[in-house]
Image (cartoon, rainbow over all chains, first blue to last red; front, side, top):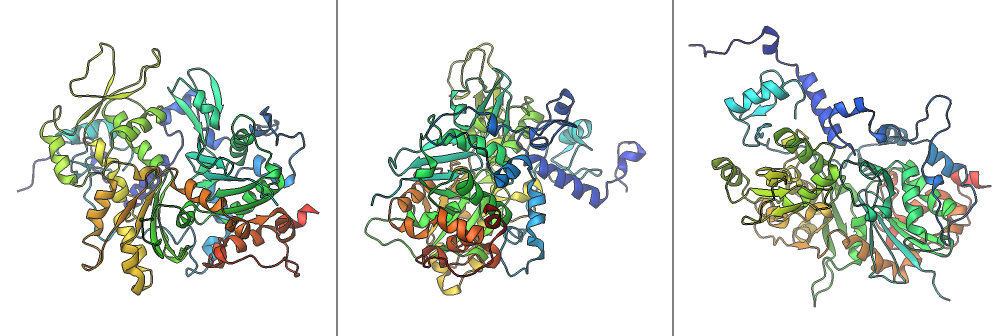
Length: 168
Length: 431
């Protein structure tokens, strides 16, 4: 006998494809790496992550730096200007992904240990998931977004507040 | 001839541990960030953050991304402050430097380190190694009456990530180094997310949530049972803790309320239940946040399996913990519980805990800097101007693309590098 299911909107029962879920997981892991990770809403208030802005310049304006505006004294404080290498490093910030790409690590034979080869291999046994609402074992998964939850109560909270937002 | 003093600078992504051989015990811990406080509208550079009183909604600009130095503008501003009369008060041109760099630092980033050290600050000489590689010089594995072990396995769980670093005879075996992309930064963000969803919105309060993490979280040795405890009685159980959030209008710090502690009328309480142990659990099971990497226990097994078979027993018996994220209560006990079933039944397992996991690498580096051995391993400014970055890497033994090289760091330096060799671009630019 088929289980009784609550009537839900047709689109809600459409599960997301694995690719979308993987993309969201990746996005979430990137978010957890951010220095000022806050709700996306904060950017509306003009408080964007400076991480993304540092070193960039607005149209027609010189690049902004902080390091040469400091007035410090001490035996090594000096008036001389930094040389080209230093100016370049200060003015043109590259993110880590770009630096990895430019370093050409991906082209090295895999026998050479590098940042790319050092990552720990996946675990042998899968871990049990935790409920994203209350933190107890999450033995069930949302049909749509695959986020785990522990029971009906947490599922309804999930459906109301988190579904679609992301996958852990 | 008197040797120039050496500055030891453990350049962590979260905090810089810095001091000089002139007063080796005197370590300064400097926030490695430019912090903007919304409350008092002041921007604090590195060491200035000690003066900050209003910790609400702090904005952090960190020189490091994913554990690697990318924002040199911010880093220079912070270093400048450290070298100035506000902290060390030193003339960099009359000093040598021992600085740490991340594991598997990229060649293009290493070049910039060299440029800053010699071209901007003009240090007399410098030596640069990842933190775990300095541990053999320190006291982490020392037992009274016994020589230091030949083989050691250093677990460095820091702010950006966690590394398993095997060392034989003082040299890192790079081919067996393993990395887990979980560190203190990720754990704090994860906790921020959980409490913001479950209780108070604290997404803007990285600083406060980090304090909650440090004060309340622990590593569980019985995860399942603890989960049940938290579920059985949600408001009153042996695990739940009440963290009284700070009140900045009255300049009061956050603290854990003792069970019979007084209650104030207007205080805000953050209830820490299963968050207390499920946050650090991510280090042991990254799969919990869908990061498909082995946890610390299994990564140690992966690393040891890559080492010579006849030496593996020595690594099991010499595991050392460094880095701020190993400070969670119960960390070593849990690691032991995970490793015991994985090790051969006849191997002894011993875990060495540091007295101060955050400054362990600093003091190890200081021990090296204080001896004449430092002069042998350091690259002088003249050598850099002649041989460029490539020369530095060969001498430090951190030229990963050529296999890192395991013995270089200990061999005496070659005599003057006078032979014809291809100069690096940066050396060319000098003239």
